[in-house]
Length: 287
Image 1: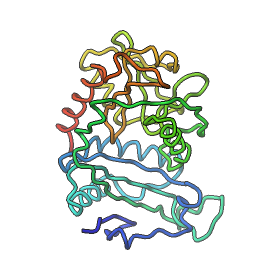
Image 2: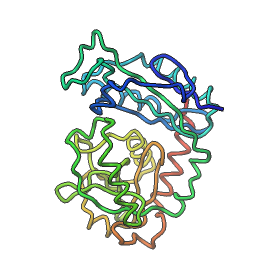
Image 3: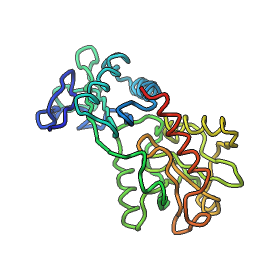
């Protein structure tokens, strides 16, 4: 069965879905996106993704393409039409199609945003075998633009970072700026030392992760100590354990950084416990 996608008010087989070559998302990377995970046919942390989407749109002066209620209904309809049990729903909003290429923004009164959503099936994503063994990361220079708090579709450098990691025999890369880790290519980064969870504080330097917010809340509720501050790669190499969070990977243990094994080279107890808590609590509130 062909996957059904959503494009500007229509549910279409993916082979029939098209967007203009003049769309500013294609020409200028002038757009934002969100990824919402689905477990058991239900949406995880959906309200958080809605709030962040609204913030990203506001920061770029892009009008919301529909109401929050309509957006929820589209997500649920895609889950139903694609019989999605476990996986993700990708959403993208661009400034739209002005009919030609121009650096200046088109008039929002006449050019409406483009709204596209599609599903990605990931059976058993909550039971990923990688979470049991952990991943390896390398460090790379962070040369992205300064507004990383806006979830834009400008993902070329993070993609290059993923490929640098693969070339080095690792799984992912943590980006470093002014000597301190900002974040991973598609995730927020953490280390654990002496029982303290350390992660960079929120600012324009990192994405305000929805999973990050939930995990830190659960950690504090579990009486874990959280310290929000920058940390260096050398500090990370000396940590007891490390992990990252993202909407699709949840809580993922890191067992090696730039060739240095952490702890005994296996996922640490804090990361494993936080993954268990996150999945358990998020399933309870999924909609």
